[in-house]
Length: 121
Length: 121
Length: 121
Image (cartoon, rainbow over all chains, first blue to last red; front, side):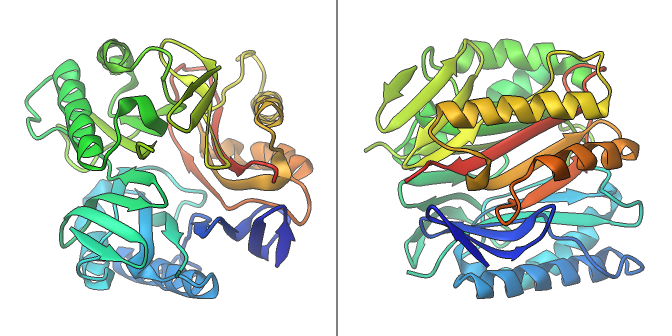
């Protein structure tokens, strides 16, 4: 953890931090699956698990999401990603979201998700 | 509408909400055209109309935009999108913007726009 | 510069502004290289220089970055971009980041970077 002028960071690495917190807003790095042998459903499940864990560490949770950007490797897998997403989101607290297709950092990555959330007040 | 811990949501659906508001900042879902038979100019016009309407409901407007991300299906249509955009933005209040090419959720979608704006104070 | 209802803008153009500032948060437009004859390392260096300069004008700097989205034209150049990035970031203050591949507005653009940062308090 690192605290500079009003910015708190979690899981600070040499290239990026997984979390930055500023004025009660939580910014997450793009989350990807560690197990890239998993299919779209499996990778999405792992990514959403990372988001749950990081938001928890930042005193937030999925009911407080403000904006989510989803990059999928192949739009033909959109439905598989959505099935996992739809089961995960908190009814009544679904976030604004955009989903577009993009190649990701490694060829076997199928989904990457960026999120911004409010901290619990 | 739904109000949780400091987050207000508008047009709350099972998958996503069109708007989240937190600490006077308005986050919109990626906006797309309903009429996907329209050309780039037509789709852009419809998308910007959605943004006008949603910002209005959130007590904001296009003079208060903070950040806009535009995904276009084909960069060869960049000029057509820009012509509609340039006529729409409020002179003196244009927002930071990035535009990249990406396949969108449906094959006939030509443009999707995400926006963040300030609420009127 | 232009100040509306709590939003300050810098480098205001007819299409976009390079910077918007609201409630101590700085939003930058997607930054690209002017010298598009440069390779990925050169373009990344120029883009990060633009970001340094704009953050400086907004009373911020790279230690205060909250979220960075990097669009690269060709993921095979990911390593070249990262080498320049890794040398640039402030140790202990690295930001949340996502990197995806996307065609950019001009064919010879290799990288575009969007950033959000906190203002110095």
